[in-house]
Image (cartoon, rainbow, N blue to C red; front, side, top):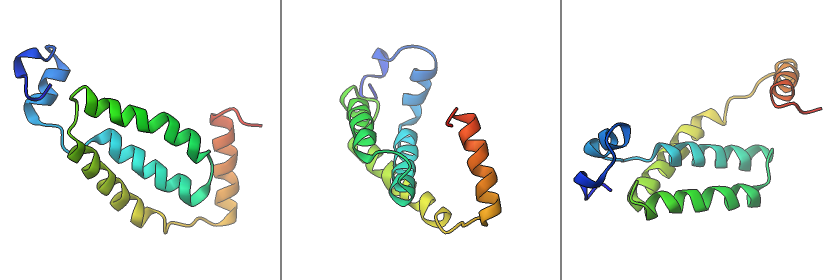
Length: 108
């Protein structure tokens, strides 16, 4: 899509591709969450990969991103995760966070 400026739909998509697509914000969030999953094992990694890899591949396939955009997003996602994984809460705060998480996501 970036190479064919006249073929993009008018509106938000057109404005995105006039300014470029590096890095992929979707990839940043995906890789940040991947490292979070590796650290805490709160979700199945195979299911995560089964959902995310086709979506990232699709974004490159349809022309929303170049592969370097995805790679840049992966690096930035890792760099954002790196300092945040050192944050450790006390057990009291973790109990409250657990209650809030289970309430928000309807987990018994």
